[in-house]
Image 1 (spheres, helix red, strand yellow):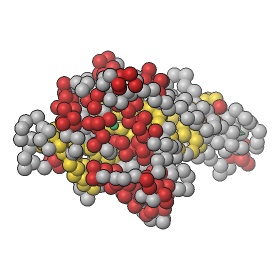
Image 2 (cartoon, helix red, strand yellow):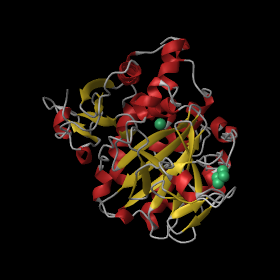
Image 3 (spheres, helix red, strand yellow):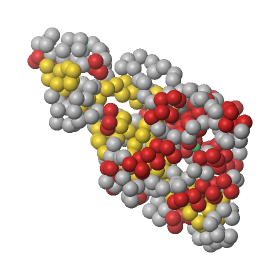
Image 4 (cartoon, rainbow, N blue to C red):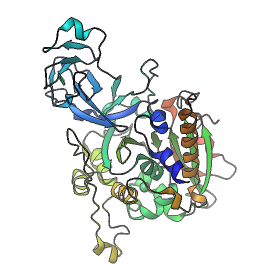
Amino acid sequence: MNHEENELLCRIGPGTAMGTVVRNYWVPAFPSTQLPMQNSDPIRVRLFGENYVAFRGDDGTIGFLDESCPHRGAPLVFGHQEGCAIRCLYHGWKIGTDGTILETPNAEASAIRKGLKANAYPVEESHGLVWVYLGPQDTVPPRPKYVWEQEKPEHTLVVDVDWDCNWVQALEGLLDSSHAGILHADILKKFPPKMQADGDAMKRGLLPRFELERTDFGLHYAAVRSGAGSTADADQVRITAYAAPFVTFVPTGGMAFIPVPVDDTHTKFYNVWWDPDERLDSGPGYEHRLDMWGVTEEILRITGMTPTMPPVGEIPPRNVWPQDRVAMRAGESFTGFDGITAEDAALAVGMGPIVDRSKEHLVASDIVISRTRRILLKEARTVGAGGEHSKWQTGKTPPEKITAASGDLLANKNWRDMVPDHVAI
Ligand code: FES
Ligand SMILES: [Fe+2]
């Protein structure tokens, strides 16, 4: 990739080609917990390089507006929530969740309110996530409902972490199966019994063979580890699905990861887990997910991966990566980092805010990454030239059937049979 392509791939601010691409899709805006049903205060949400204000009305609905007051641009996040509206602190304009200007104490109502509306965006709340659609408001597509939304909410868990780097760096980590057995070698040893076979296979097969296929929602690929199955004649396969542009389904078990561009150099990384057999809102299932994935409150706080977003202004850099060099020297820890999340984030953030991909030397096992870049770049060039966007996830594959899978791949078997609902293109 050259510099121009890297810029095209990574920049998502208003008016950029990739920014136009990503605005065509529903995107997680924030976890529901940030706006509790009782006594919630307005919050500032930064997405795709722009600021918004979100607040919860008395009836529980969420308002999602441009942060700038339509009067003279004061930040609405400082305002009061009143009923199902927000009142600007500066001159008291009151704006409803749908953007209607309800009161203008410093202006004649009839004159100013005629034809004026604040920009309000559609939101949907489901299973701990608030989604928003920021694209053209005359054609709002239906929101794809994913597999975890079929579970009881208490059987799902969302944890968000903050990475000080461009979202594509986070995405590329998710699509890179060949690092799992190396960077995460220590954690794999701690897999619980039902994930043990996968963990062992990843350790044994450091050089997987990749088979990739385009699908109508993006792509899926298999990482096949020869002879690493549970029996002598079986290979092991891990299938990852990428529902472009944001959502990645990764084996093992019920997991999806959603890196969302906050701006060009900050990413909100959502971990989503679900388990039909176990509740995840509290108890052992909850504890285990946090511990296994290294997203306990303590780790997130120490590494600066928790939100510390100020109400206005630039987001200060805050990710730090304490490394246990004593444990590394003693051979007790390969990375010295505390958990998978810190390992992934430290490497991606450590590349710099936007890594210079013109200096890379890609190898065969980077095929999924190079293919994903090509797909995204092609889309950006098409949309940037005024063409139609691809409408990923509106094809024949039902969004709730997009999934990851893993297990033994016996001779003469096709891994595509393990994800039968994915439609190839
Ligand atoms: S800037 Fe908001 S009411 Fe004046
Ligand atoms: Fe990783």
